[in-house]
Image (cartoon, rainbow, N blue to C red; front, side, top):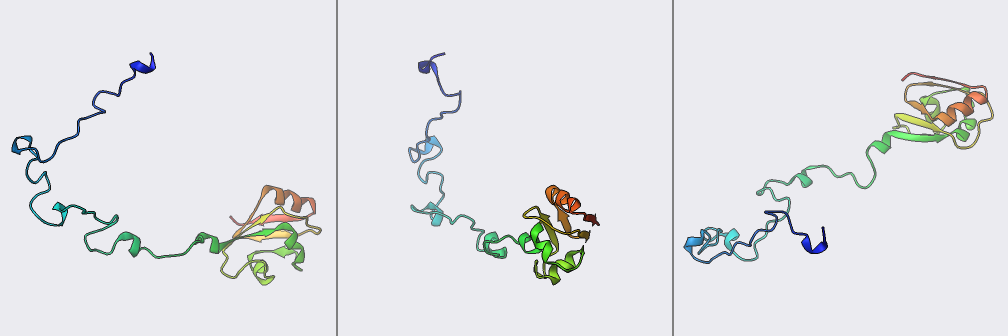
Length: 148
């Protein structure tokens, strides 16, 4: 096969239909646009998303800005920040009381960043722990008892 042998597939290139060239062509006189009206005029263009006067979908949906809705209810806590909590038994309520997460947070992930110098016990629902953080907590003599 050579470059000069290449051809488009059969039916890929169709001839342009010539409008307004007699009634025998099937598209004479009004050229398929019907009689009068906005759609028959030159320059006609419907706005994208137009729904016939009904409030368009993009205006019916609520706005929320740039930030994710899901990000409000989740948070990350670094392992080194657990040192600042006085209690050895740490759950979601203890993290909120210490001011490490906001009150509207429902789930927290403990990530390996920094070190932990004392044994702590992580417990309760809504807390997730990365593999590295689990190893660091267990190495410090702590334990993890998560509900789900």
